[in-house]
Length: 416
Image (cartoon, rainbow, N blue to C red):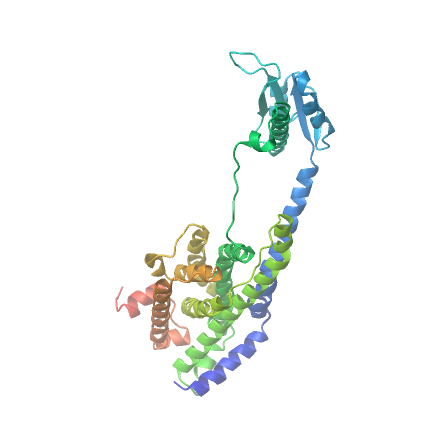
């Protein structure tokens, strides 16, 4: 290998990529703006829908309100989000959507009659969101009225609020604002990070292989005054660079957008979550990202190199992309632990390393296994790529089979 030739070819590939609108869009612009914009749109949409829902009025019918509890009825009447109405057939009107809920007050079934007690029966349609919302508002009002009524009656009996309460339940959240922010980032960022690694490397991988063939420059590149191995390594490092760049840019953009977009939402709930990755976790995340970028880039280039044009390259690389992304979506469950068995699974292991590193957790034995497994995957992929360029019909593009057929006939030395 000539590292001087590799450097020259690598710089050439980078310059060509920066002149390609599709690659710049997918590897630089998209990672910076796509997910932050999506998050902003989602937050705006949720806020808008929540505001619209709060403005919707609930149509409620009260039946047999006890005279001693007229203040409860007055509370319903003065609530601007509730419209009290009457119905001859409440059950039918609720099913038809004309009425949201019916509140019936009935005397409790006790051996000793108590005049100021009552039971409440709420009739609503759980399949309708508006009826569910009405039921929630009713529950809130009755529960609040019950607490205030019992406290008032206890005061009349000479009981203080502490005596009436009898016992108290306090909670103490030991996690700080930084830990809460890191927990949320650990659930969201790894899956997006892996997706952007794949997206950032997919288009350069296709363009540097199938794209070269489509533009009839593949043979020209292969006949330059350097070895095929140097050309392969230069293209490979270029694709891995674009993949890594896309992921890092997206990670930075996501951290910025989570702090500015989600920060006000948490402060509204009296939480001041801090969306910052621990400084000591950065090297672990970057090393995992580099290894994963190398592995993904090698796999995508191998598959795309069998295509005759860009469209065929997309068709060949897409299954590999889905095979990488879909399984790791199931790893976003908070209760999943980073075990040794999980550390042996490529891609999934890096996802768990990044997730725990964001939260400041380091399982060093599993991290070591992850690095070894990903390194082996990269070496195997490069060995396959080196075997491919040794075949002349593959290099000149005359081989018409798929990677599976090539592997059976040449790599595994089988004949059909």
